Length: 368
Image (cartoon, rainbow, N blue to C red; front, side, top):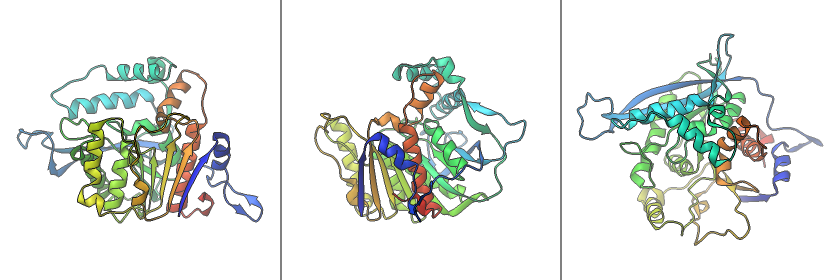
């Protein structure tokens, strides 16, 4: 049964902090966090796919390279230190130089930092790059087994775009593995099916690799996708039988026609492939959706992805939330610049955690 919520921001914020009624008491579905947050990078190659054309097999880019950013429950030692936001932008530059070789970038962190600050009219690049995170680099992981959440990044991006949510999930006892949005060589993501499928295949390879890790509970796996990564996430979920729940953060599987003819054609190509047309999504699906201001209706029509969902499906439209608010970036920029903050991201995080708590941990208090 489909449930669609279109709730005022304040009411939704209250809802996010409340559980189901139990004997006249209201119990929070989000328990007191037990863990600190650790981070590490895992890298390998997929030898079933080539990446850079017209090079010898000895070239480091001959096979498809894959990097995975992992956030996990940890017990940091006294000498462990937390990362600063600039670490992720430097990592972005390192990967851009590697995946796009021989093209080279040398000032991406400051350039991107400035663009973020300009976009949200707050902070300065140096303040943003030095902004502390709560993520401990290479911290000792907890010895327990935890559910795995595979995060598929937005168009051309990396997981750092939602690291605040990953920190919250790790504190709650989840391992989060981020799948970068990298298309065919030289890595640029497009709306072409051939590029989209590269991210889907990367996610599948990462999932298979992580199942070999001792700390993963392979019976409890969820997917989380933002924007174009939401589209990749549902493609992966429809193709596999080992996923138990999915959350789409304003995902592009719901396509609004009429903005770009070429993008409409690319989207139609994907949804008209045989594999997509014959597939359904049978696992619990939560879509957290931006809510356009009155008078800003879609130009044409909308692809009804909900018709592909045969399992439980819930859609929550969040008042006052734009597409960019489903990322950590607005909050991080505004916090680093000591500007006014919004509760929107807290709501998005709470609803995401509630969904995974319900379907990956059996927490009935996570119901809607």
